[in-house]
Image (cartoon, rainbow, N blue to C red):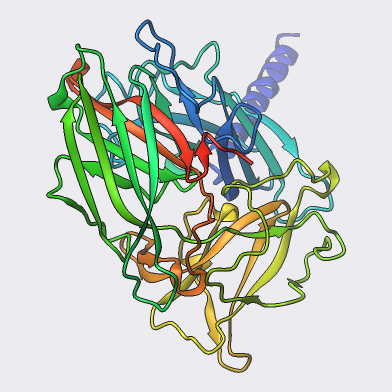
Length: 446
């Protein structure tokens, strides 16, 4: 009998060892890579709302016309197995450089994996899963205002960043007013020279030190990679290698009386081009290439459709058709060939084009062309020119006037953020005021 027990015992030990080896090998086996197709952030459940989070505090009493109490992150990926992602949140300075401040950037506290995952319909081959993350929540809270990044990682490769997105946290302490005045600038190209002067005025509580309140940053709605910085640190002009043009600026007054931040001659650009992919006859499902019935043409003072203020709109797309379409953009330059790179910027790439969005010139058809996968939606976009910098992996010296022109009726919304250099916890750039407006009215949304 003891001999039989020894045999059973030996068999059990061998079985457990086999299981242990199996799980160790499974853990060490490289996991299939995750391919990120698209990431976007917006306010609450409204995809037209910018990703601006309002922070509650006893000092946050100023009226504000922009912002949400919760943000929504969407990520589309392709993976062979269900995804295992987690998100971390990192505070940044005014220039989006991550703060080396362990008090503010406590990664143990600012981390979550609370994604809601949905599998793509079986007919969709370009992406396999869509994840949704809503924050803040009962566990994840934001106690410091300013620029923030959400950074996404895979549990199996936690050292490799797979995607990130920008958002803002605002503690509305100071009311902000922003006004437009039509102006002119000297474009390099033969287009209408419409531009805007933007002036912002604030009056801060007495406890806000004037010496620490010297930066104001303006963005076009949803174009978070294109800042216009008005700062006392600059000598009367904002120059950024990102832009073809530089812009006169001025800061005057005192924060507890009235302080003004002004920037001049920002090109008006044009109303965004609109691509409505809800029409299945024009944009059919499938993996084959879809071409627009007509080439896009150069614009100057003209426009043809009312845009969506830079947002991507999917609410008119049924769940079964919420997919990606392989399509080709075609721009007819009408003989005006650029000596710079030509690219497409729009809601389908979060207005942050990389090398994958650079067009090539087809000498046979005399058109600029680009093939890309686009999520089915109503999109806004523009054709730009510039120079691709492989070191920064972005286009520089950009402008949109060569093929888009300028139009005083381009009703883009502009969002302004008032920054304050807080000395708490070693110092960080806080946002204590914000506003949204456009040339035709305050807080205008489509």
